[in-house]
Every structure is written in C-alpha cells, then in structure tokens.
Image (tube, rainbow, N blue to C red):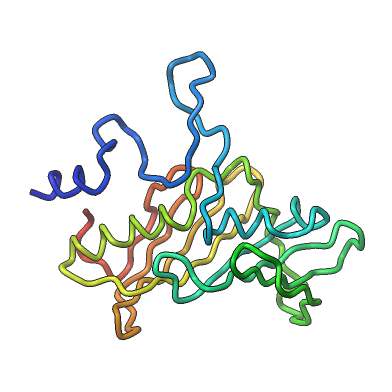
Length: 196
C-alpha cells in the first residue's frame, strides 16, 4: 500500500527518478539522465536566487523562507558581495523581485564558514521539497500546513542540503527533513515515524 501511494505521488520512482520540480534532464548522449540545470519556478528558491544582482549570484551562502505552502511570501538570502570582499549582505526577494539589500550585521553570520551554493549542484527546488514533505506527512497520517525552508552548502565536495521544518495548519511542528538538494534523497527525518 505504501509503495502504491509513493507511485501516485512520485510516478517516476520505479525508474529511479527523484521527485523534483522544474528539473530539465539531459542524458548527455549516455542515455542516463543527469541534472543539467534547474528551471526556475515562480515563487521558488531558484527563482529567488536568480533575482539577485550578478555581484551576489555566485556567492549565496544560504536561502531561507518561512511559512511556505508551498513557497513562502519572501525568501531571505545571505551572500558575500563580490565587489566588496568580506561584506556579507542580507537580500530579501518577494514575488521573484529583490525588495531589500542590507548589510548583515550579525557577527555570527559574518563568521560563517559555509561555501557558496553552486546552482549547478541543485537538482530539487523548494516545490520538490514541499512534495516530499507532503509525502512524509501523509505516511504519518498528518496534515501538512506549511514548511520553513533553509538551503545551505557546507563544503565544496558535498551537495547542498535542504532543511525543511514541517508544520501542521495551526503552526505546530510535525517533524524535520534534511534532504540532499542534488537528488532529493532524504538524509534525516526526525519527528516522522514512517517514511513514504
């Protein structure tokens, strides 16, 4: 029964495909799909990353958003300013438009050791994370109301990670998912007894 439910939610699961949104696969002639690029979906995290000025594009350390259903009203990005090395900026994107660009005044944030999130390493956008969260909620007979998202990268040779705090319609935390942003594979699922 669980397998049937997973197939209904993620129809490509038998073929080894990962549930993603906006993914543009390219076999590269080998016949094996590989991630070439992730197409931006309106309101998604990738669209928010593409909305920031070029001087920040290759130096985004983190993107987060709260209350997403599936996407939040605004995304907050932390990025180094390539034109002024050592300057960490807090960028706010709403409706796929940059609405705020201010210095990050947090000493903790300024000492961050994370590496920039490589767009080429992203195989799953926030909409895909939402679908995975829905599947985990359903497998535990829970109702997903919203997700708080955080995307970070901690090392050049390790894929970025999505951390999704899943909430019910009243805002109560149901559980947390840690998901590889490259493939959509769930690494941890504290709070969720059953996997889909």
